[in-house]
Amino acid sequence: MNQQNDVIFESVLKIGSINEVRGRNIIVKVDKQKNAPHLILDGEVIKNVSVGSFIKITKGFNEIVGKIEGEFISEDKTIKNKDYSNFQDKIKRFLNVTLVGFIENGAFKQGLQELPLIENDCYLLTQDEFQCIHSFAKIEDDKIKIGTLLNESSVEIKLGVDKLFASHIGIFGNTGSGKSYSLAKIYHELLSKYKDNKRFQENAKFVLIDFNGEYANPKNGKDDFKNIIVEEKYKDEYCLPDRKYCISKKSIEDLEILSILLDATEKTQKPFLDSVINYNIYKKDNFSFNEFVKQEILQIIISKKDKELGVKVFYDLFKDINDCFFDNKIYDEIRNLIGSKLDFNTQTGSYFQKGTTNYTQANLDTNFIQPLNTLIDSIKFKQDVIFHIKLKIILKYYKDLVSGYINSEHIGPLKGRAIKIFRQLNEIIEVKDEVPETNKNFTIISLKNITTQSIKKVLPLVICKELYDKHKKTNKKRNHYLNFIIDEAHNILSKNSIRESETWKDYRLEIFEEIIKEGRKFGVFLTIASQRPSDISDTIISQLHNYFLHRLINNKDIEAIGRTVSYLDKISFDSLPILPQGACILAGLSADLPVVIKIDEIPDDNKPYNETIILTNNWKDK
Image 1 (cartoon, rainbow, N blue to C red):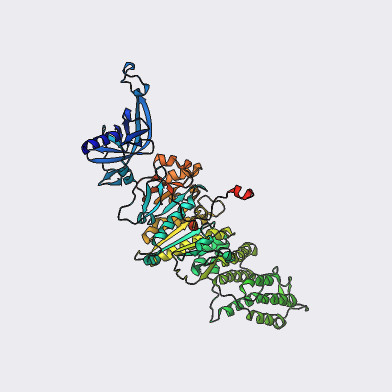
Image 2: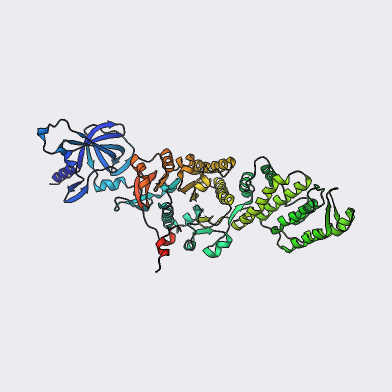
């Protein structure tokens, strides 16, 4: 009786046989009685084959799996008009099928061991077989559930932790397609699973670069394993634990980084910055920091000056270094002293005391230099390293200016940018000789309120480069894990931006291309999310291992995916512009074949802070 049931079961599921074999692409001829959209099996209605579904091909004891990518019909000319009463009987239906893998010992495996033969039978998949080919992890693997099949909500999509997170991940989609939600879901599931494990706390670090503040909302600050960093003036708004990110002095004084940060020109301003880096203001001839800076200021004062500089150069000097003082009142006293005691003869290029007609060094020393020396001696400079770097730039500028080594028109704009940028940089970062280790697994760096574009683009580069270099040196046993997560990655990985110099583009792309090509060896991985994959370097996109592809409408973005992602089949690729919100195509090493999934919901506390505004809720009176 069971054998009879098996025969009936098999006859219902059999849909046809192979008509042609062209490598991985085969043509299946469908039995005429199986052309209906649905079939009846054990009293239940089951869906018949259609484009996008899977079939099983039997070759002896081997079971080969194929995906239907198209279908067509032709007229059966062997049937004469008198032999049929219905025109449909004369139609032959064919399926274009691409072979994707095989079933062995109850498990689906990607790839091919052998090709089928003509006349091999083809079958619909049973429910167990359908579940089998959508099981992307072994039974013994650690897994996380991220969603369900879009068209089969009963089929859960679980991914192996090792295959997904020991890889580079790309999440792409137009704004509003669910890209940020998918990013939040993936890492929410991972952290929920492991955050209480002591070894995870010790060995795993995640750094999220958040350009729009989507993940730094007030609710997220409650988690003990998260470290959320925003500017000081926004701390009360967010009620977050930390406000500054700490980087090393060595990183911020890197010539390339400093040149990019200050938008230095290649021929004149970059060489000046090189001299600034080598300009030591800390110790010289056993002087203390304050003593040496004081001596440098006095040296600028008494040096022979360009005739056109005049007294204004001293006003400018103290004005520029004013915010490096603890006591701003000293600047007012120095300014009053300069105004009341010092004048300049443009014909002789000499300074003299106001009220006299001749320059005498003795009078100048007594009435100007000595009081100035007393005031400078009372200055207490701020000890923050970032103020010291700015002080180096300012002192070197005026020292070279009064000595005639530089032209103010060439270097002056650089000095002005440095004062402005370092003022804002001080609100965001803290520079130290050595960066202390954080005890938090997950660090979110919000760049939402940074208005200076050079800082917004350079800071992620500095952070990632510093952590990557340090990780390479210290992770020799390869037991520590580091993952950079960059949302809106086109902001720093763009290859097409015309607002930056070629040097800047080449430098940052080299850094991130090295991370994505070599990082795996050191336990460093990259996750990028972007709505413009066409803007991102092809090298970076092609080196990703796993892709979550949401709706993409722009032709250039679709072409970029087609050009660099090798895991997609034609049906998946063609469906990119019509995916519904919250659905995405999963493709890559963690999935044996591309599937369209619906991302599961996550708790409100962990959702990205980017919901689309419902206008009518704000426009209608309640």
